Image 1 (tube, rainbow, N blue to C red):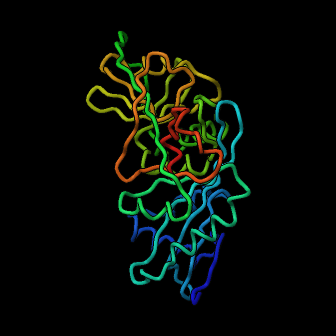
Image 2: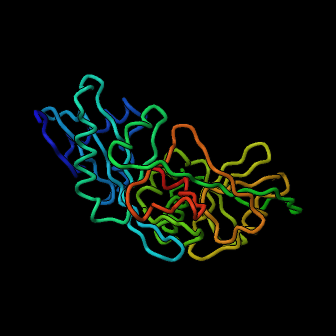
Image 3: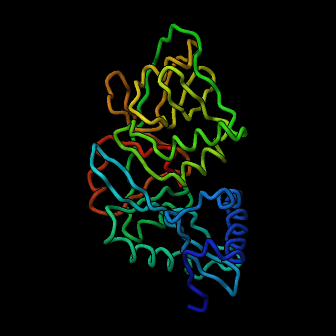
Length: 288
């Protein structure tokens, strides 16, 4: 390999800047504010190839702690897979995938990723198997007016309170993820305008509302909440609810196979062999 293999270089200003430039060029976002805010922790590790001090290819590892039906799980999620177009066709992503899998396959309960539709034939080459996810939804007839409060996350006090809760969040799903850095990245970035507070349950809710439909991505609180109470707090304009997680109690919910463009789940490891039968959904906020 003519290029330098490097990893875990978040504190190297030059390499981090180059990494962010390639991320911006590839995915139209970057990790600049995330790093500056102190959210880039030891759970996010880029595995890269560099030409001098220029990052030309990358496969990132996200260390993910999960609880699945009461059992602790340690997974690795692969993300930010990219190669500079000027260096394409040299097998650089393959090289990095092999390095990551070799390092972690015997250290964790499983490895997973969400693939773009253009590369669905790439990941099976490494033993990954396409898996199904299932989404829970139901029609609702809410009688009360709206009680939920929208949170302005640009206000520093609101932001601190929310992030402190997220850091110590209780489980409110059958399949729950604990990765504060990732939650902070999403809720202070792409979903900064999707944060609500439910006074009745003393809980934050990350949600989308559109034309009478409510998508609850995650409930963030210090205790177990009543999910129906959370739903009702959004008021009588809501007619249908979709969950971005797997609820403890599925009674009354429709369970349908889930599909999202450019978001196909691939898994590697014995822990995932029968995951389809459990009718699970990886929390939408766990997508790196």
